[in-house]
Length: 478
Image (cartoon, rainbow, N blue to C red):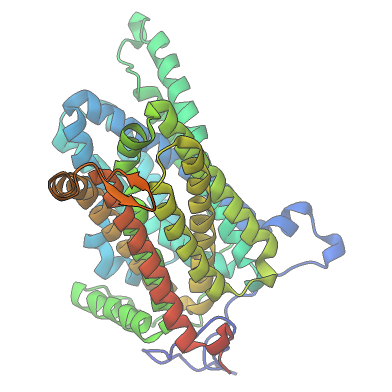
């Protein structure tokens, strides 16, 4: 019997509720527990394992390319050039937002991901020959355009590859692939730079500089990722695919469907609350990037080594949060735990920014990481469970757009705000504020981190209020 097509603007759905009119999403086949391999038990399906391997390789390429671009920017134009390049890495999400999600919901995601990997490899081939800032900005922009298409496609396809109950574990593994590769990529970049330096002493290889060998290795990682993805089976979306007449792309039509995606997000209070919690919280958390080294040096007296310990503590906390969600997945009330994790991150940052010595600050930064790790995994899991396949591409593209907007605000506003608040503090507060016999200094960087913490807490509380109103007791509606 033919299955009815979903309405153009579907009713909001939530995790745990079924839509009888929705096309049945592909259910991954699982062998009996006794016959499953260790890989299937951990990753859910062999297809997701291959997707995870592709993500590891692709993320490795992303980070190596990012480091290479920063090194080239510093060599060409110094610190100012790095800021310009960072902006070029963030902006594509805004320009692509009206069409990217719509394209992902219309096109074959497998072909999109393979094409993006091949495209990134080809763009990187020209990076060693870049010698001006405008050229570097163009390369960075093109790489990010392709990444903006690749990442939401992966997030949208993941629920088609693993059982619903395995989504939290899948998101935890994806986070490990995305961020656990940073130290490996950094070590590879440093090692390849040293090898390139040695090889360049040969007359026949004099064209090599410190970043060129890393770039060529990066090209290979993207090509390998494309090969891995090309061997995978993606979900069958034929029953929900639009007819050929709807596959014709126009900007006005794409923008209309993009607005439909946002209307769905606004109508679904669960999805809206999660996106507000993740996105707004990033404004606060993102300020740690430009302000962390300054706070460590000015307030904690830790210098460069101290900032390294802060980053290490944050990473360990994130890892602990991800592991906790993975282990306790079936026992957690996801909406309540998500909002609690966001609030924990904000409170930890507020307390950590109040410290004046390194050790207690490291403990509180680790707690910040725990909250951030839990919120990331649970937020993505709630969205993947609560959004139907035909709207998932637009939803995750909207999320990536929101994330980039919040990070851009944090990167741009954080340092400026620290300077402005520092001047105001010096004029009105002098040496600091006294409370209960204690005097706390109020440099601009501390005041800014306090404000960032308040933003995170408010985002968590607001999300929690919406979720409680929408689902009294935190349980799915009948």
